[in-house]
Image (cartoon, rainbow over all chains, first blue to last red):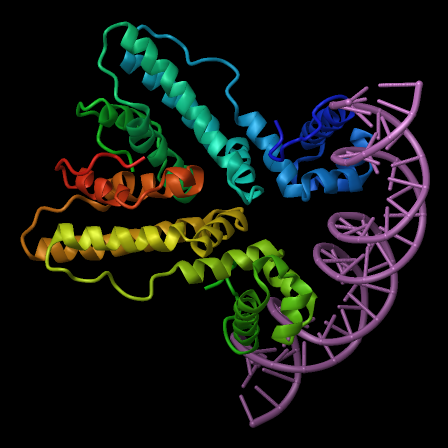
Length: 192
Length: 192
DNA sequence: CCACCAGACGCAACTCCTTCGCGTTAAGCT
DNA sequence: AGCTTAACGCGAAGGAGTTGCGTCTGGTGG
C-alpha cells in the first residue's frame, strides 16, 4: 500500500503506517492541507517525526501515498444497461471527482511526491480497471467495445489534460463529446 | 514573465528577477535540481533570502516560473512542406523534449508550484501556438487542417497523459499513431 | 526640477522543520 | 526460546522558512 516496499509488513510497521495515514486525513480535514507538517502529523499519529522521515522521506511522498488512496474508486462502475450509458455515467462522475478542488489537489499530490511515478501509474490503473469492468460487461451483452488503451487515449487523457493544463476550458458537456468520440458516433460539439 | 504581476517592472525589480532566475539555472546545472534551496539561490543571485520568499513565496513557485521559461519553444515549428510532415516532426520533437528526464521535471515543477495553474495553462498555450503556426501554414497551402482544439485533445493530451501517468507505455511510434489518428487516416497500431 | 509616496529590498532575530547518530524495541526465522 | 536485523524513539545540531523594522529605489504630482 506504500510506495516503498515494506520489507516487513506485519505488526508494528503496519500500525505505524495506518496511524500516520489516518493522522494525515484527520488533520487535513481539520486544518486544511496547507497546514500539514511532518511533526504535526507525527504527533497526531503518536510517532516521532524521524519515523515519518525515514519511512516516507518527505512530506510530499507521504501526501502522495495518501492521495492515491483517496483516488482509488471504492465501488465498481454503475450498470446502466448499455455501454454508452455506462461510459457516460462513469466519465461524468470521474470528471466531477477529478476536477473538483480536492480532486485536483490529490492528483497533483500523487504526481508530485513520487519520483518513480509509481503512484501516478496507479492512478491510471484505477481508471483502466474501471473501464475494463465496463468493457467486459458490455462484451457480455454482445456489444462491440473499444479496448482500454484507446479509451484512455480518447477519453481519460483529454479530460485529465484539461484538468491539469487548461482548467478554464473544461465544461459539462465536454464529457459527452468525449464519449461520443470514443464510440465512433458524432456527438455534441467540443465544448471548449 | 513572473507568475505574479510585477507591479513595478522597471529597474531594480527586473534586475532582481533576472539574477534570481539566472542563479536557479546555474545552480541547477552545477548541483542538480534536488540540491536547490532558497538561501543558496539567493546567495548566488546576490540578494537576501527574504527577498526571494517575498516575491515568489516559495521555492516551488520560483522553480515553477523557471520551468515554464525553459518549456517555452525558442523557434517556430520547422517547415517540411506538408501538414502531415510538419505535424509528425513537431510531435516527435515535442515528445522527446517532454519525456526526457529534464522535460518531465520541468512539467512537474510547472504544475506544482502554481496554485492558480496559470503556469500550466501557459505550457498548454505554448503547444497550442506551435500547432496554430503549423495549421496556418497548411491552410496557406490549401490543405484542410483540424482545429487546434482537436489537436490538443487527440495528440497532445494522450502524449502528456502517458508521460505523466504511464511512463512505461510510451514508445517511439506512438507519436506516429497519434498524428495518423489526428489526420483521420489509419496509421501504425497503438504502440503500448 | 524637486519633493513626496509607495513598493521592494536588506538586515537580523526567531521559530521550527529536517537530519543524523545511537540506543532500544519488536518482528521474522531457525 | 534465542538470534538477527529492520524499524522506532530520543536528543542534538544544522539549516530552512518567517517576520518586523529601517532603508533605498523608482514612480508620481506639484
